[in-house]
Image (cartoon, rainbow, N blue to C red; front, top):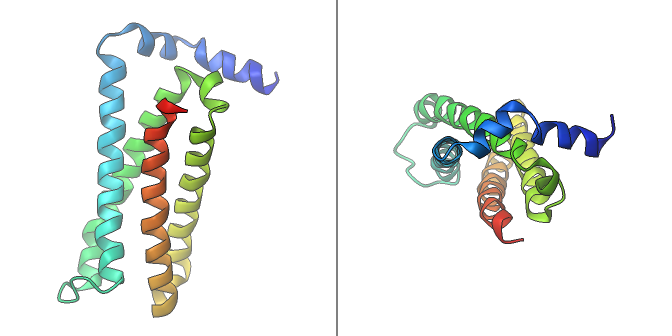
Length: 151
């Protein structure tokens, strides 16, 4: 099975057909996707801004105990709902430049988060650089997500 066949199989799946056929299911999944990204990016942004020096009176460790699980929940909701949205139009989305760039930026955001947890958080300069990159990357993901419909 080649790439085009695989994409066609996704679009032809029962799950994709159900999402396309229901007047409320696709919008509900899209709402979960937006809420998931809001939770993900909101939690990350608050923590990144704290790392960059905003709200120094808030202990970073305490904020992390709240922000990291919220970001993880948002990531799970966005990734699962995004996969569901993708299968409804896999062939077109796989060729959409905004979608492809969004996925690249998304991967960069995940890689930066892994770098943060593995090394950057223990080095103040690297932590600030990682936080600034994180803000830029996640805003890029959001922007590209909106552009998908227009490209």
